[in-house]
Length: 185
Image (cartoon, rainbow, N blue to C red; front, side, top):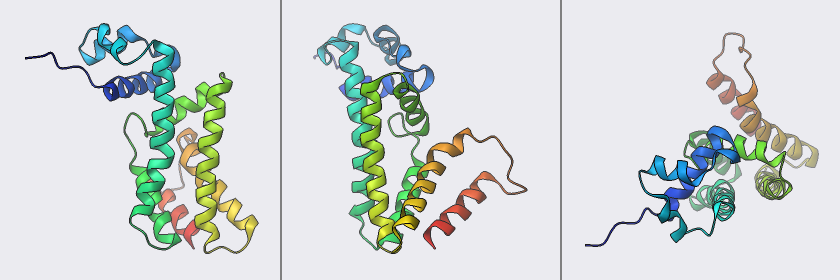
């Protein structure tokens, strides 16, 4: 019986975990192999080198954090408000190594120091904003209002993790639900 190879996706997911925990410097082949419980030799069956892994990690993030989410939202149909509700639910529940907030924040931090990563991040952010504009534009005739709602949704998704303030007797979940209701009004 042949030896079972560690799947390519396992290397990418473990790389994303390392990225989220310590930035791109933490994505080291030996460390990933140890976390996966395998030798580093299996890595080279999939990736030429560490840079190839980093590139595939970004490819996977770009696909899973933008296009796959949009496809999932659109798959069930419904009007723009129903799709926005579904989008909010999907993104709030995203906790995996590729689509979770920790990876999102790590990629944003990495983009501050790497122009190629910054270009990918802009592409993903622009795609997300384009999608939000289409949805909000479906029931909001004022272009400025559409842009405002898009920016608020995006800012809440990313920025809420940087805010340590209390919310005047409300929980963070209650504030986010209130924001959701107001944005869809």
